[in-house]
Image 1: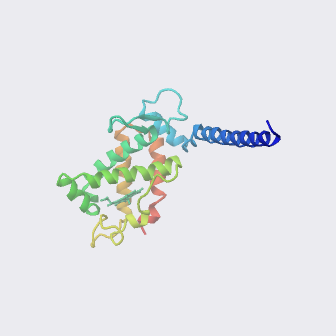
Image 2 (image 1 turned 30 degrees about the horizontal axis):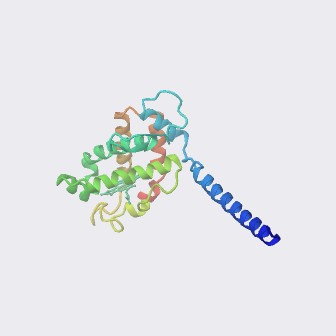
Image 3 (image 1 turned 90 degrees about the vertical axis):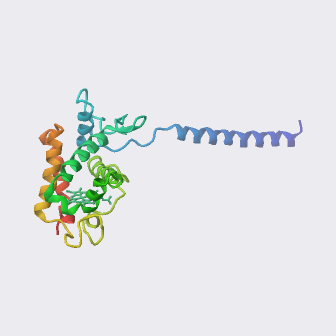
Length: 207
Ligand code: HEM
C-alpha cells in the first residue's frame, strides 16, 4: 500500500469509529430510563390506599397499575385514588340542591344522558388535584381557578344571576368532597390534607 492509501484508510477508519461511537452513544441515551415522575408522601399514601394498603408506602403514588375503568390501560395508583375521590365527590355535588345553581349546564347535560361534560370535568378536576398533590408538572391543562369559577369567563359556571361562589357555598362544596372521601374510607388525616389543598385556592374562587 502506498503512503497515500494508508493515510486514506486511517482517515476512513477514524471517521467510521467516530460514527459508530456516536450511534452507540445516542442509542445508549435512548436506553436510559426517563426522568422518574415526581411524587410526595401524600400522593404515595393515596396510591398505597387504592391498592389495599399493604406493603411499603413509598413509590406507590407513581406505580402504574391496571385502570379498572379502562381495560388494557395503566394508570398511576395515586391518580386512580384521586380520580376515585373526585368521581364520588361529583356524584355528591350533583345531588346537592344547595349547589345546583352553579352547575346548570352540567346537570342539564347529564339529565339528558350526555356525559361528555361530566367526563371532561372528572378528568380536569383529577388533573388539577394530581398536579397539586404529586407536584408533577404539565398535568393540568384547564382554566385558571379564577376563570373557571366565574360566569363571565366560563359559561359552564353558574349563570348571569349567579356569577360567583359565595363563601358558604365554597364550604358546602368542600364539605361534599370530604363526605365523598369519608364514604370511600379515606382516613381523616388524608382528608385534612386534601381539604388544605382545596382551601388554598379559595381566594381565586371567592372574592
Ligand atoms: C374547592 C376548590 C375547587 C377546585 C380545586 C375546583 C376545580 C375545578 C376545576 C379543575 C374545574 C374545571 C376547569 C377546566 O376544566 O378548565 C372546575 C369547574 C367547575 N367548578 Fe370548581 N373547583 C373548586 C371549587 C368549586 C366551587 C366552590 C364551586 C361552586 C360552588 C365550583 C363549581 C364549578 C363549576 C360549576 C365548574 C364547571 C363545571 C362544568 O364543567 O360544567 N367549584 N372546578
